[in-house]
Length: 250
Length: 261
Image (tube, rainbow over all chains, first blue to last red; front, side, top):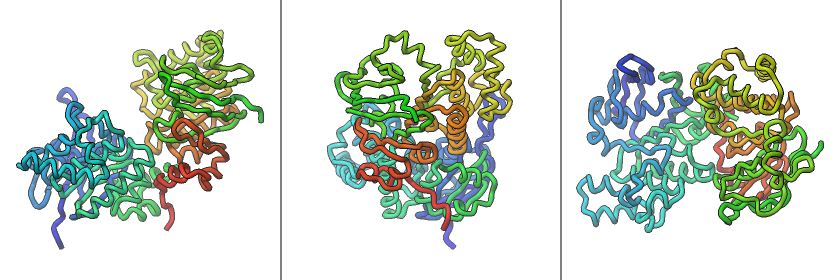
């Protein structure tokens, strides 16, 4: 058996206020992800989905547990140590770009950091924009000059720039209109599968997750309460909470 | 069924740029009409025009909005204010945000009701308790005594919907009333609105981008694109057998749960 690309072991995060122990956002979460696997993390607001992703991306430190990425323990690693392997796409595309810099600058920044020349980065940005279906002149546009869907395409191009092994999509399509959402989901699906990337797809839309993912994890109050193949979770949920969640879908 | 509200060839412009174009439809007593479409298609603008809530640059440039024989855009502000509440009420996406954070929910609802009715605080309490119980709220006294931040977002939205019903309006204009909610709370809000129609025979215009909510609630649906209604009809007909290309594209884009193998 091959070792998993990502392993989370008993991850715990407590948000404290004024030095007092407070809210347990993530309460003993463990799961593995294989190379190229697309895993959906579903559950209601406040269940801890984003906190899990933020810990994997090293934007937050866990209070307990371990994160193993590509056989290396990155539990305490900095963002820079993992960003070549893990990239994130956020819910609000416009807010995830620096408003004073062009989309081309935003997409190409990681390439420059990785040691490419400006000319090489420019060429690569053009290729990336083409891959996400944006015309080349969008490299010169600012975030406020493009629509939400176009900006999210640029955010995906930015995440793909340094060829990460794992893409964390935190409600990446939730703020978009359904027709735009369908386009972005199709794009993500093609890119992830084409490049053999793994994807953790955080989403509160159960139907979308069922369509998009190879496996679903259901989160409730900081714990993973159920996991399995999408059709099995939707069609024969075992836990009461999963049943409630599925029954609520109109 | 009597016609209650009618839009006749309505065009609305923001700074002289039309955002709603030549829209006509009517709403009957006890009917729920869904209005769907993408962001920017003009859905919310339609509702705001009826309540004189357009931003200063927004004007109804053509057409009439008739409510029981009165053309709403022509009414003096004072008269429209009199209708707003007891006749026509609006529910917003984030009803919780329309409450003042430093006063209790009960005090604010009392203020809203006493602006239109001569009512004592005790009379109001009785009326509010009766309404909230009918709408299946638990622990009504606690809700009225709470400050907005003491209730969850979903509960505040449900309270906001109930608050609009305190003056028993004939028409509810609901602008994305469930869009900010999680699926489980969304279902509760949908059930509350359906219960309101059942108990009070209220007519509802439901503006939403959520096709699932429209399918669960609306009798008829109007599909908007670029400020125009491209298709309007019985909800089932329109969603199952869309006649227009755009409606086909819209319904096909909605992910559907595969509940059985």
